[in-house]
Image 1 (tube, rainbow, N blue to C red):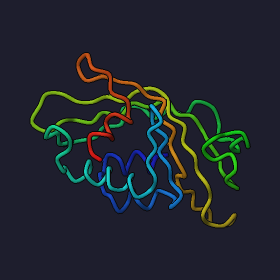
Image 2: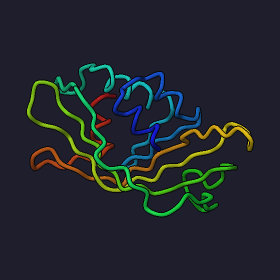
Image 3: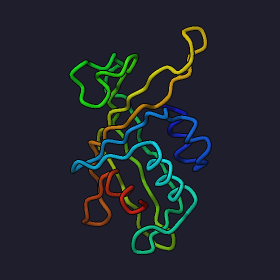
Length: 157
């Protein structure tokens, strides 16, 4: 997860892409779901300061919190996202992501929990864990307006 934080703050789309499994799914709020291609497109827009909805441009990302809540566990079979994915592991994190808006003294803050799913795409001797998915359980704010991680991403589709 240290690599996740590094790539979010470093804003390098190729490095971020390398963290993700081709089977990646972002499970957002209100039945919003993004697959691998959509995730790369959205994050490319955010990382490369490409204008989103209402002319919003993200100039910086700061991860002020990324704390594990529990241990990595094999994903239970009944899990809707990756319960049937062989070798899937998951762990809930308490996070706070701050997306700073260019030219304004404002930022979107997505805070709360997210579940990260990973799987080893390497070998037992040479593991290479990729992020299979993220389930967004965050909330947050911009002034008095709530913004989840899903809502921030939606600005850059």
